[in-house]
Image 1: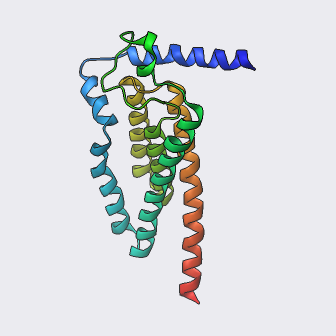
Image 2: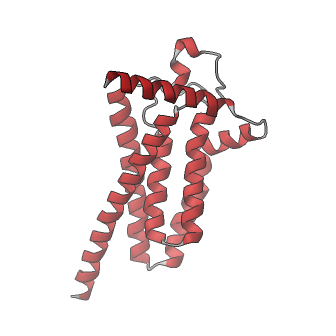
Image 3: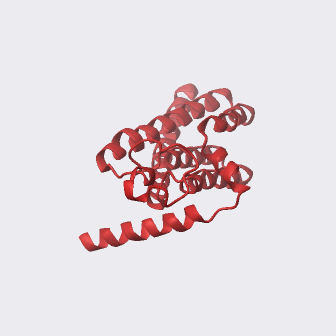
Length: 194
């Protein structure tokens, strides 16, 4: 078992160097932009605003609260729970790796597993796509989540496994919160109909 874990970590390191090293000068600012959380705010406002345009206001309000709950849970599970428990160093905090890869941002926090960015964006993509249920929304939101997640490797902040596991956690939590949202919505409808 220990040999398997070592092999997976070794492969993860090799993939990190390949993905981090594959760059084009015009992509550097774009990937930094995708990694920058405040840049996402207009997208979040569009998603929430779209809910109020397409759905009844109560449903839209509940969905907006669901999005907020998704962010809260994905962020807390990834940052406060898993990172502190696993304590895997970021590539930027491995002393012997200094100068051996491209770091386009500051070093960031000490631990990298799992990627909170990946967890947050895939949680949002999962929950919101289940609410919207429209191809014109689902494809772009998952493409955006994938680009944000890839950007974390590109800028030198995360290993591929950090991003993959963060995405899985985000998808799982987004789906669970959607099931909870659907249950509450059905109970509210039944109460209004009674």
